[in-house]
Each structure stands twice: as C-alpha cells, then as structure tokens.
Image 1 (cartoon, helix red, strand yellow):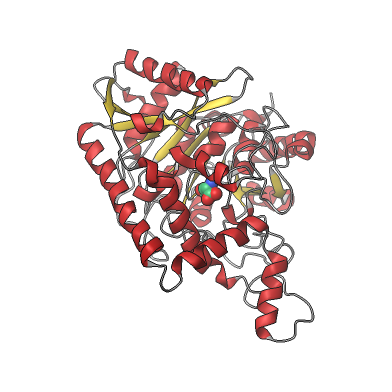
Image 2: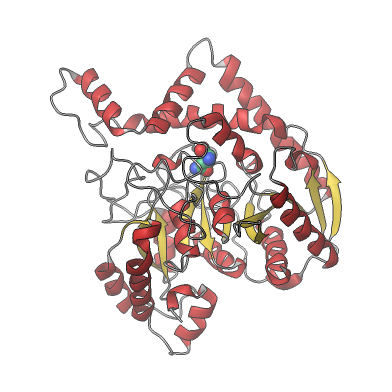
Length: 471
Ligand code: GLN
C-alpha cells in the first residue's frame, strides 16, 4: 500500500520503528501526484528536491518528524510561490519568510510539501474561483471539492497528501472536508497565529488542518497552536495536548441540536446522514438536547458585509506596485493601480472588493458595516447562551453534498446561502470540525459538524473521535 494513503499516526509508528524513511513517504506522494493530480488538480506547485533535502535531516523524535504536509497557497513558506490561486501573484511573488504555522510545523519535524489549490484569495466555496485551474472532487470528477481549501481537502481524499493546512474564514476548511469525506478542523479564533497567512478577513480567518483522522487533526493542532508576538490577535493561553483526551467518549456529554440548522432547503439525504450520526452518538451515551440559535438566519447577510469589508481593505496592497503583476503602459499612477487591479483580480474577488467598499463608504457604514457588527454580537451571544446548557453542538456542514461544476456559479447569492451552516462559527470565533458521517445516494460524502465553546477544541475533538469510531 502506498505510504501516501496512511495517517500521520500510522506513519509515525513505522518511522520510529525504523521500518520506513521520510524519503520513502515523499517518493510515494510523488507517485500519487503523478498518477492522479492531472485529473484532480489539487496541487498548484511542489518542490520534491527541497522536500527530500529536508527529509534527509529530519529528527524522528519530534512529534511530526518526517511527515510531509501540503500547504494552502495563501500561507507563506520561505522561498516558495504563494499565489493565493490568483493570476495577480503568479510569477511575481515568492515568500520572503515563513508563516508562524510553517515555523512551528518545521520545529515539530514536519516537511512542508506542495502548494494546494484554492479559490482565489480564499473567496468561494468550490475552488472554481481559482484563477489557475479548478480542482475536481476525487469522489466524482464532475463535482467540485468544495472550497476555498479545495486542493487541501481533495489531496487528502485522493491519497496524494498525508495531511494539509487550510484556512477557514466562513467554512473553507470544514465545507471542503465534508464534500471530500475527510476531517477538517477550524480552531478557535486566536488559537493559531495568522502571521504569514495572506489575509482575507482578519477578524474571521483561522488556519487549521485537513486530515484523514481526528487524531491526525489533534497532532497538527498541537504543533501549530500557541501565542505569537507577530499576531496580536493570537491568545496567550496554554496549548493542551489535544491528543490526550480523544478516547474519553461522549457518555454524559450534553450535545445540542439547533433547529435553525435543519432548514427546509436542505437535501433530505444530508438530513438523514446527519440524523443517523446524531442517533449513534446518543447510543454511545450522549444526551441530545434541542436548542435554538435564533440569530442564525442573519449569519450569511452579516458575514457577507463584514468579510468583504475587511477584504476590501486587506486587498488594497495588491496594486501592481507593492504586490502583484504590474500592468504595462499605464498613463499615470492611478491608471496603473486601476489597470493592474482590473487585469489581476478575478471576478469574484472584484465583486467582494466592490461590496466591501460600498459597505464601508461614508453614509452607508452605519446602515451596513456597523449594523453587521451589532448582529455579529447577537450571533456570538446565541452561542454563549447555548454553551451554558450544552457541551457541544451538532449540525450539518453544508445543506447539500458537493455540487457539479458550474451548478451555482451564475448565481452568487445561491452559492453564498450554502455557507449557512459554517459561517456563524467564524463570526463567533468558536472551534468547529467536520467529520465524515456517511454518504448520499450518489455515494458523495456528508460531514457532521461539531462546534464547541471558544477554546473548547478538546470537547470538539473528543466527540469527533467517538463519531469516527462508531460510524
Ligand atoms: N465560502 C465563504 C466565502 O466565499 C467562505 C470562504 C472561506 O472560509 N475562506 O467567503
């Protein structure tokens, strides 16, 4: 069996027993990429020589010693391209530094290997907004893998990566994990440093793992968590060992089911898989409690004001002067900015910049941005109140399984509404995971989402592990 199809936990056992070497793992990843990535398009680039050179010097006593990890192409890794899947940055930007998560992965012995495809600047939920190439779902090549971390999820599902990092601003780790049938974890806001992540919406972005097992997600979270003086929003809290309590089970835990997440528009097959998974957790000893998160219906509207507003500011640095390919022969400086940005950004990114600029413009800021911030507080309070009654919350990740390519692309609003189950966790800053829960009639994967209180990753992982064991 290809080493590229194993979990970190399995590989670490074989590595420390001296049965395999890190270079053999890299060889098998290369073979898998050559065999299937021309169909899947999970990778934007890779450098096997560099990875092999690192592998030759790995310390196998470290927790991730010898484990190659794919990196979403919006996370800076020294000396590597970091395109955010945007033509604007193709051939014009090579990272001059390591993001803190990369420094930490390297310190834990991991080997960054490969740049994973994504929606341009992480805006989207299909990876179809990549301005380089679309990624295909390994379960059905005619379908999308989800997004924006579609390459990160698809490679793990296609056995062409052991594990990857993604980023999640409104669901971009959990939703592709659900669509590809793997595990995807969004940590609490502030748990993981964002330094070196090219910002989409700074108050919502978090980096997290896409893996083949819950234990692997815990291992990576151990490595990348922790306060960082380079990110003032990273929290000064202790990082527990997230692998320690995984097997505690769910007996006695109170798990909340919010009625607002089981909307009429959801696919009955998704409802059935999710309900069955909830029943199994009940049989495993959890107490299932109906709850309400009354402001859920405003989450999509709130997010699509706040995220574009922050994006319109964050993306101003891509102007052809500081960053990005420069338009030729522009008349003056303003034209140079305009021409470079017009040529560089894809249509979804432009739509977000226009939406955000409008929401922040004088006279409208009260009506939109400030109001959205107030509603965000109400959404956060819904969760605070719910977690007084329950230990964790169970929901679908997405109302539907992976759509076919182009299915929603002519109607951005329809696509935005699909984010209904994932967005509120980012607005509230709480952790969430997607765990494979079953399949629909077309054999497409369905994930169950487990949400926990802020900094409550341990309970989230514990429930996730139980689900993985019994499903
Ligand atoms: N689908 C959402 C969006 O398009 C979330 C993206 C993300 O989490 N990066 O904004």
